[in-house]
Image (tube, rainbow, N blue to C red; front, top):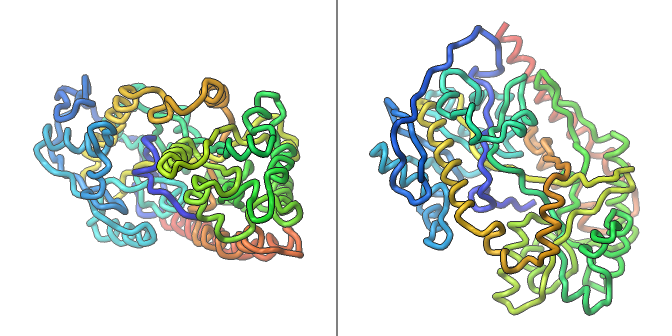
Length: 467
């Protein structure tokens, strides 16, 4: 699945952290939390009003990213200020030093970070997302956000971070993510022009009529499929974007594979039938190119975030193409659900367990978070989409903001992501298949289990070493 860099995907800020030990956590006694005074006014950005910063003995800071800072700066414009650039300007103004961005390709980050932590050359701030959690936590590559040695620099007792979300992401009893806003939920984006010409009821209208569930979604996709123009496209129904998790993370940090869970299997059976029996979704690799084909007027529906919807609308406007609308994900009634369980995404920062400047790292993350909040507050509620969304669509987004959501964590376990994308996805989503979903899942289950066994054994070995 093509991944959009967190830095351009969202202004959602979060921090994922884990062990300060070189393997697993072990309670070695309490450390008194340091008292921190926030006495320095933040200057250097119009979006740092009333932000106070602490004194730092050493404000040097290294951030590991997959994009160079020169490219990051291009994202910052007068009409659309970018939080990282604005926060970096403040850092330079207040502390008199530049922040160093260590550029490392996403595919190499785990190996790079492992080596850097072991050698004492680790960056201070590192990425956090579903591809790094719980992997980096289990490997001891990130530091607990509630570590008393630097937790006060986060100002965790304030309302800067969303503490209710912190509780959802723990590893061995410690919060892993400090989140400032809600996750990016997935929606159904649909081609209004196509629905109008076809005389079909739109997804939003079905939602307003309390009839937007999986059963209706399938009927709608079939009705909007004609020849090589499909009712649905994209990767929104992939195995790791469902309403049920593929793994369970235990309290001790070990993982259990849930691919045989009745509800998960019921979902995958419905998805399999949707593509292989009903032929209602694009059944070829070109579904990966939805961000290009959908705005051009190919296919009727796709699943994406509000940011993805904005990109579709902007591209369609440039192409003078069709008009688009947005609706919630359908309720999976086939699983007995009466409410939505929506795929979501979170992206942000962690502090490395080998950070040489953890106090500076915590200070910067708090700063960028607060700057981001001020940037968001300075814009209309829906930003670019303020004049695009209808009143009904805005009301829908408000009304569904509290929907239950899920982030699939199997992507951060060993080679599971690659196994799913190369072994399970192709026979279900790219080509006709006359076998069964059970046969396809049975084929990948031992491969996934082997990765999970390696993950668990490595974690338990590290625990034993700490005894």
